[in-house]
Length: 440
Image (cartoon, rainbow, N blue to C red; front, side, top):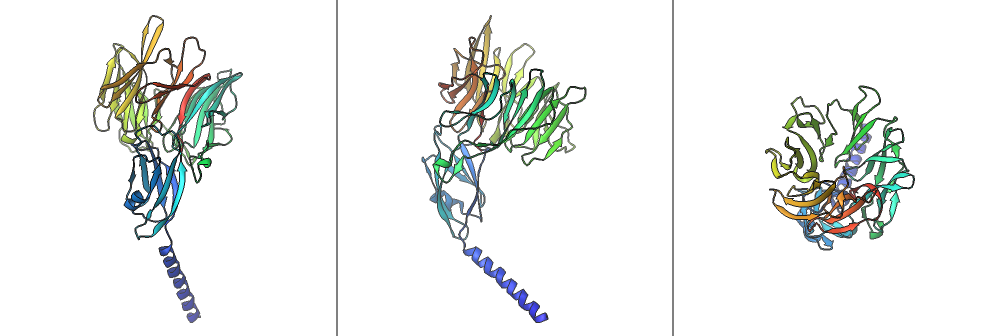
């Protein structure tokens, strides 16, 4: 028995050694391709391999078509491809990938396509109410939801893998819905790149609420802030991307926003804004006093743009840089209706409004990180629809907003060139609000 046991152990060791030798001589493989939303370029993609790679070899051997300026970041595995296109990307990118691992083994040459462009989603006015729809590359509007009397709020998940929305009925009752999406932005053939696959829409809560506010971060987490029909029924729940749900014990004087990179949130208070971690560390929250509201996050830099309200009714735009006092970029009597910034926080866009009697005039302004005005343009004959956002797509270098005119009952989705501020397109359909959905 002892001899047989030793033979079995030797055989097992031999099999392990043979397997190790086989794996050592097996070429490396690409395991995952994950679009990366936090970056300072035009678009980014994380590539995970079966073993550590030589970054310089990958950078030298791989090619992009069109040949956009790009960088390869990372040490061994994973590696990140950051595209720095000087102009907006208007079609899918073809990537020819090859190179060597740390042992000199060649990665099997491969070619595939990636389309980092986001999608436009709108709450669209239809005959019997409103419906959530997506604009595909062919210019067709694809229904994503049933028709409700009204859609109050739409929040695309930051990772592009879902959409949450709040519908309301004729009695003023609101319900929160969630729809899972499967992105199809990467494929082995160009024809594989189509709109995301929409799964069945489901209620996020099993009850109606009096009000609801939603916020998502780039990880795909969702913050759900609700109030019921009885005193003390307010609830704050965090639903993480993996489906984990937990209640948060926080007090807020208004809608809260998740930080883009995760781990914390901005909580409005009666005397300013507070920055709190999602997990209580026992330390006092960071406080920014004054009548301020969050305008936009600049995700890759940790910066944010705030709108400050002064006692004399002036409004200012401030750039918040971690570790520094807020930097004032703009101060005037004009109303600040919406702001946006690029990922690095070096460029800031703002829609400003001025009213003379019954007539309102809106303009859009592009500033740099110290407040110097680079471009400005009147939006006439259009105005920004009240309460709707201004959003930047760094991939196509376009701004998306919802505009309206006095003669129109509903808004229109409008696209502007982010550099020149010239109109690219005003889509001719009646909508409540338009937003970007990242390609995921």
